[in-house]
Length: 98
Image 1 (cartoon, helix red, strand yellow):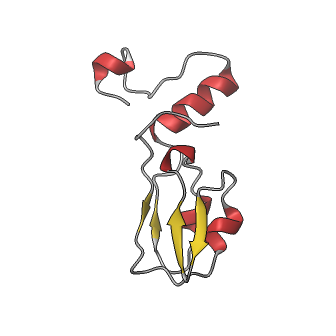
Image 2: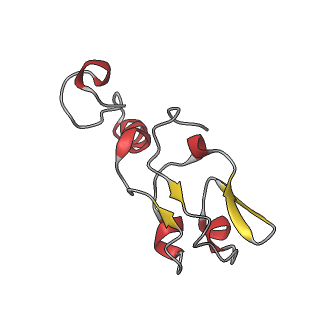
């Protein structure tokens, strides 16, 4: 399942990556693959910003704002049984969210 397009805070810094593969192992959405000796992002829009990749990367090659953003809003809306909310008040399209 994809969430919202082009909103994930995920960043990969290939120059820091050693290709250990931990990010690919811990990612529940299969956002990463190891190509050669470096991690690569398969599809940023699959990222749900859980933070597992960044927390487990010993080389600081990944940055993600875990639990924030529109992907988190969609998940929280599903869990709470309501509409997704970015938490910034008003409708997302008029309040500058997402």
